[in-house]
Image 1 (cartoon, rainbow, N blue to C red):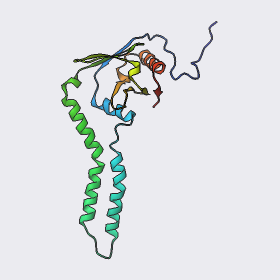
Image 2 (image 1 turned 180 degrees about the vertical axis):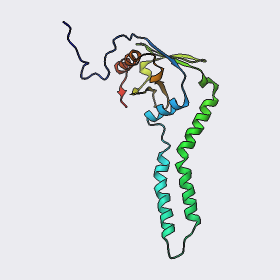
Image 3 (image 1 turned 60 degrees about the vertical axis):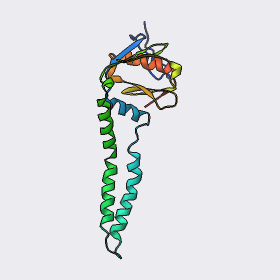
Image 4 (image 1 turned 60 degrees about the horizontal axis):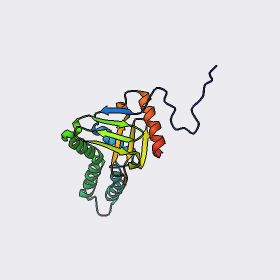
Length: 187
């Protein structure tokens, strides 16, 4: 009689039953995928400037409106409110500019193929092919919807959305491989 064996308590990912290495993933990367991946590793931070400057602008507006001695200087609150609105829309404008520039590049409009194996990550685009050994990455960030591999210096990243994996077993096998080869950071 067979008994149920749960996954090891120290294991980050359950064992893959049917998946075998290498795992090949192919698909088109969108600008939204890039932005979500950059957010996952803390490199998309356009909200910080408005968060820091907006309270100062609100204080200036409040002080200028409550100054009863000299009367209200209307240009100050108007400029403060306009600057606040400009800052609040900064993340949306940055996102729009990024998506527009991403979509303008023809090389980003073709599918990319990644092959995960014990030797490393083989990446194939319409214009290049490269095999990067696992020592060429400093860590893997695995979130519920993507894998982000950090290159040394943390200025370049390889990322693969989960939606591109054909089966759940391929996703699990890839996560297990990364956990065995690289330090893994969770969501």
